[in-house]
Length: 66
Image (cartoon, rainbow, N blue to C red; front, side, top):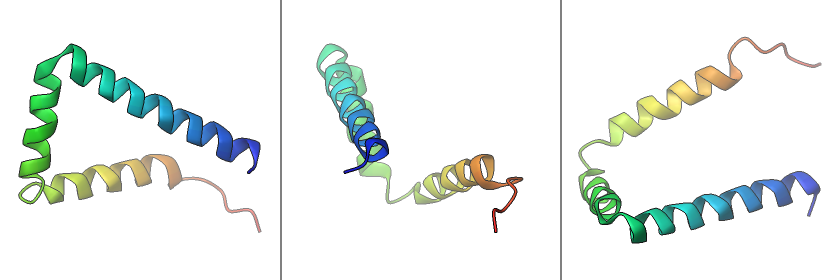
């Protein structure tokens, strides 16, 4: 495992721990997460738009290394 992979795995672990702590400390966060999971079948296109926006923000305008 490279150091970059370790950093990414650690960041993911911290994000999951933060989300769990937020759900325990603030019950409304848990209610929002449950609602979002239930309504995901209706709002999948919002996830698609968000993914497209992230992709455009990070990968557009970069020069290709050949």
